[in-house]
Length: 137
Image (cartoon, rainbow, N blue to C red; front, side):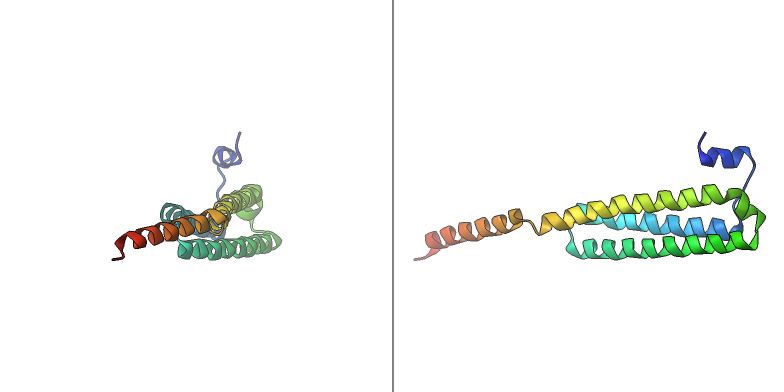
């Protein structure tokens, strides 16, 4: 049985703060996914850079959410205590998703600086020189 199913079976719910934190993290990860997807589709270095910044924001947010959760635990909020294991598991899962997306971006970035791009540019330049010879009077 998954932890989320356990949440429903035991009729538990997140505290309002915890629920809002999960929604915020979810939104950031979805936004990151959209940036990465568009960067892959368009091969845009600008979007690659934006995706890297987005990932850094998610890592920072993840740390702040953990600290916020721990602070609620220290206060003894009952909903927080009852759902702590699920809350932290969700944070971990969203972080892992963003880490996978970041690996895709790092791979794209590595490809864009690899020699095949330089070779393609060289061949295009060389082809242009050949065409230039034919076009000269």
